[in-house]
Length: 244
Image (cartoon, rainbow, N blue to C red; front, top):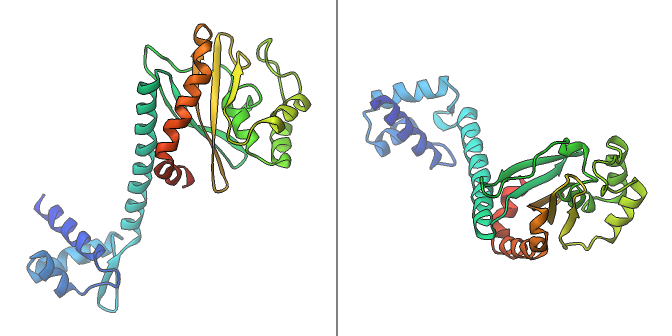
C-alpha cells in the first residue's frame, strides 16, 4: 500500500508539470528518497503511466486513458444526477437519448417503481417514427438524413394511432417548432403518452423526454413545459456532457 501511495504522489506531481520534470525535482517535491523515486519512476514508465524524454518525466498514454475515462464518467454522472432530480421534481420517468452515426441511442432512463418507464416492447432504434424520442431526434436532422433513416427503418404500424406512412411523418416533422416539445399519444404503446424536448449541441441531436400513463395524459404538456424550464437552468453543464 505504501508503494502505491508513493507512486500516486509521483503521478500527481508529474501531472503538475506540463513541460516535464527530472527525477531529482520529483523526489524533492514528493518528499521521497531519490533511490525510491528512481525505482518507482522506472516502474511507472515500464507500465506506460509515465514516459521519459531527455531526462524529463511526462504522463504516459496509460495515465491519459485513465484521465479520459474519469472525465467520461463525470460527464455521465452529470446527466444521471440531472435526470434523477427532474424525475423527482416532476414525478415522471425521464429519458435521455441522442442521434449518432445514423442511430438512435437511449443513453439513460431514470424512473421509480411508482412512476415506471415505458416498456421497450419494439426496438427504439427501429421505431423512431412512432415514439416522441425518435420524432424529436428526426425533427433535428436535415431532410436527407431523415429520408435516409426512414429508408433503413421504414414506417410500420405499432398501434392504431401510429402514423401511417413516411410522407405523413415527414410533413409532421417539417411543421415541428424548432425548440418546441414533441408529443405522441399511444403511437408507440397503447396506454402511454410521451413528450420530448429537443436539445441541439453543435452537430449532435439530443433529447430529454418523459412518459405518462394515459389516465394522466392531461399532465403531459405541463410536465413537458416544466422539464423544459429545468433544462434551461442546467443547459451549460448539460451541453458539455452531451457534446462529447
